[in-house]
Image (cartoon, rainbow, N blue to C red):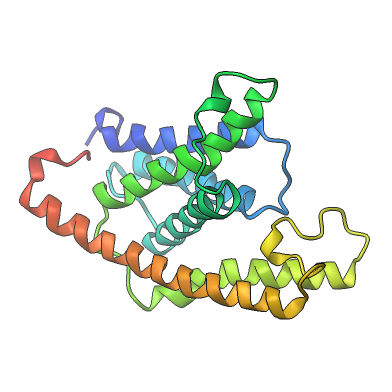
Length: 216
């Protein structure tokens, strides 16, 4: 099989390009979940492209890791759009203003890459590879991120940017409020993780009926 002629390979390289370009253009550091999730996506899809070529297959490797990357980057997109940007249209800043590069970076990291990864998850092989028992493993990373952030702020009070996100900052409302925010987000992430698994099943059913439409 000549994988170089298959759209699946080029789509996954495009995902890596989107994440990589967004990371290059940003001035944010690894303390942000956005940056960490996009690094994971970049590493996974570059690795996936390499193994697709090496093995001569359109199927991405390591389905568990793929599912984790999908969940993490989807969390990034939804939290950014809903909680941080309050649903504002991200497009105007791309064409005007002095911070266009920063807006392009944000758009690539928070919108383009998450949407492309979700399309990959729904449309490309392998499908029906995720398991419900993967959810606790996937959720350990965002929960661990919150715990590490709070612990680091306590142990190293001089650390720059102690609280990257307002919902992790106990300065005004206290740790009880932060714990409530984390608990609420955890419940929402469980639902989102279940949706990721469900979309895997949905993609299997849809493309089983329409094999000619498959991007791979």
